[in-house]
Image 1 (tube, helix red, strand yellow):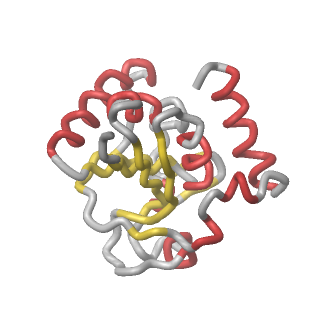
Image 2 (tube, helix red, strand yellow; image 1 turned 90 degrees about the vertical axis):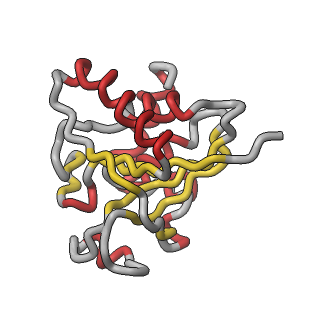
Image 3 (cartoon, helix red, strand yellow; image 1 turned 30 degrees about the vertical axis):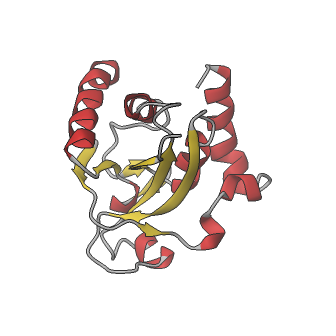
Amino acid sequence: MSSLKSLVVGGGCFWCTEAAYELLPGVEAVVSGYAGGARPDPTYEQVCAGVSGHAEVVRIDYDPQQITLEVLLDYFWKIHDPTTLNRQGADAGTQYRSVIFYADEEQKAAAASSKERANPGWGGKIVTEIAPLGIFYEAEEYHQDYFRKNPQGGYCQAVIRPKIEKLRRFGK
């Protein structure tokens, strides 16, 4: 049995990113959180207000014998718009930036390679940041598995559900 590995990415609202990655076989857990800022132990309110410097991110815990880092990274470009700086749909601010946080040189190289492969498909306009991870802070409990726990919520119905249905329809 292999040990799990982790990847941390931000593609706008972590509720959407979490729900999208949970569709993939080999992904054992997806944890919503915050990374990339200077404030220790940030709260959701601080992150949303843009005062912490952190982005909303997810930590994807995966089995590398079932799914590769490259597949996870290539999927990232399908689940959000990496050409909008500090924005995903109506969500605006640096907390919603497109970012891949790497934990080591292998992840850094894989992220750069994946971005290079994806960029032509986005007209050469990808603005996604690739940065060292630092500290990952787990978000408050009520953010975890948000879509699964709140499928009838307004944001879930208007934003997350259509994204998930599209991913399912087009084979992830």
